[in-house]
Length: 243
Image (tube, rainbow, N blue to C red):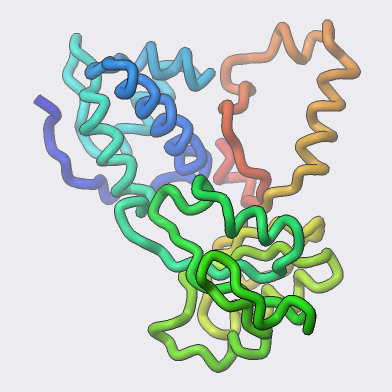
């Protein structure tokens, strides 16, 4: 019914990768409500993109749909999980155990899809040695001493802006190639490192822009291709990846 479940060898653009979790979340909600089969038109309407884009995105993962019937929701969720690596269990290190670092560490949703917080680091003597969710906060200096098998797959930076670049440098030096930066600073990393930003101040500025123009042409007359998905990550990417 669903065709070849093998993952396509085609390069998947970053814009598609960013949309896949949106599709996944929508599909999960639909499956929970008892919907077993989803059409590309239905998925597109809920994701606020066009149906052709949905079909193109999903075709990069393989051939899963049935013409006239749509996609098996549960099966498609599993294929998106596999494409996103959510079927793995990636260890995550949180660096900077202030209010935000603690909130992320204590959040079940933060580690709900293929990740788990495995290590906590800080430099504050008042914080180092503290235990949070069964993990002891270690000093940043210990990152360089970690055995390869104990090194995190993903580093989450929740430090003040002034410390973020140094933290990124240390994580990259020990072989971490995936970074999620919450600090309000643009970081410089090697080209092989995947860096994503989550900056709440930027998101508030974007909302402020639209709030200042509630009836402006930007909102009502936006082309379908210009609409952003319901969930997005703030990052820096090459223009060719944002088609």
